[in-house]
Length: 134
View (cartoon, rainbow, N blue to C red):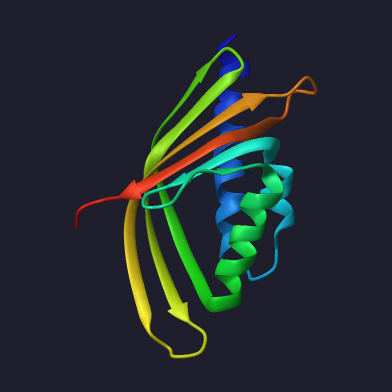
């Protein structure tokens, strides 16, 4: 069972890398779509929860319309418990306003919950982020 667990952790790590690459590439929404469930929930500090994959992807598209996004994730742990995965860590984000050039640097904690699908792939069900003190 240890080999399968290692494979699952490697999958979650690849998923995080692919999502980060997509977030850093304007209009590359497909990796985010591929790695999330239709009923995903996005919970960002200071915002009402966003329910549903298309609503979460629309929010990212809106963000890209205003900002150039650069994000780097630092995973502190990945745990697998049956068909549920937890990826917990922190991220550095730089948003550069496309119109004004203003730069906003954010530091936040993240918690991603994923579930294993019938075909063995993992998909995010919940993405939770809150500000992290500097």
